[in-house]
Image (cartoon, rainbow, N blue to C red; front, side, top):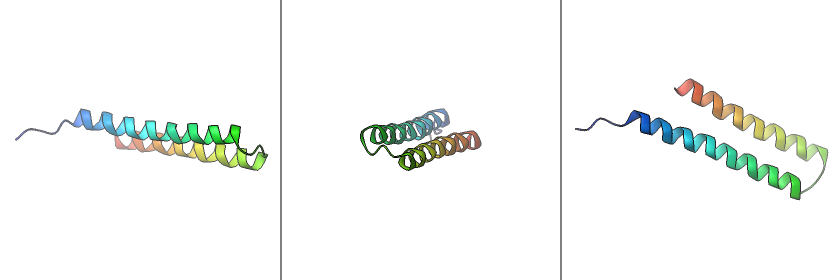
Length: 64
């Protein structure tokens, strides 16, 4: 029976977590630039994207 490749799993989880958050951050940034220009929308988008990045980072620190 082969042992699971734990390092490979961690790398895959890290890539998916960080890449997914960056993708959401990029989409929100694109919508913020091309969409409405109100301050309320910018604040919500910035706080949401920042929260997602902090959450992903915290998850990775706790998990490893």
